[in-house]
Length: 68
Image (cartoon, rainbow, N blue to C red; front, side, top):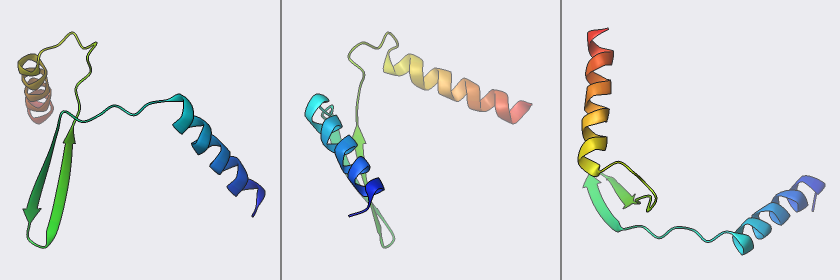
């Protein structure tokens, strides 16, 4: 094993031990043509913005890009 592989493995092992991965709220599977997309949805429990506000903000940002 090379030195870089050892360092990478150690970092991954340490991260896995000390950090718990958030669990998705929902998992959806979409098949388009011959490709299957798996979409995992996560929400920040400390978020201050509702889903409606977030979508509105993203739409307004896209509209501003198109009009510029």
